[in-house]
Length: 348
Image (tube, rainbow, N blue to C red):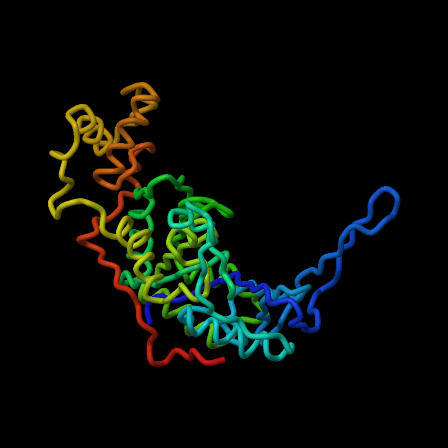
């Protein structure tokens, strides 16, 4: 499978009377000025596996919560990972059951009775089963080699996504959006990410093999972080509503389509689809003109031009064209979604 889950926040409020032993890393208690107890809450504990892997777990009151990357447990790396259904199965069998906790259930959502807006608002639904509040959906792409991977990253650095700001962290990581928002999309070279996050004392021959593979194929990873609001809007909040097929479709619509298939022709961009003044601004930007710095137009006008260009062509003209990192066209570097190779071990 080329698309997989790399992080999940999932919880379930169980029925009254269904008791289980609390699992917490500690407890926080609040008292008022008269030293009277107001509330106590448990903190997250660590469910640990081999190779310095873990997920966060909390069972307090009637609620059981898990946060982390369960598919990574007891594995040396997460170059590839598991589907949504497999991820939930791993949580149930390898995290909840060993602690004597009830497994997550996928009961269908119910509409609130008497709410006239219930057919329009996802927040008007009740979820008797487990709910997901954060989900990272990921896909790996082969670009042909490390050089091609860097060129492809430069190309992605010119692409925009609607309603989110693009930022770059060094030469090998690009973000659209921000942490804690409705959605965040990331693109990065996996080989560099491995070197940055795997501790040197834990680096093994298997890590080296995976690292070389990432460099050889120029592996670029695209990942979308789906927050609670975006999950609700797409009917993917309750465990009974989520399928891997729906997540793949959402990934294609929100990530692969806008970033890997921008609206351009083999011989260039369809400039005839732009209004005349916007077309002149785009051509000037293509030639390297700093539209704002060279006083091409006012800031308000440039924002209006940039909005039209982004909606029609999927390109940002808000930054000066940098010919030192001129990206290769998509027709030259064609990323291919990677399936799990035969030699890669998915089992823990």
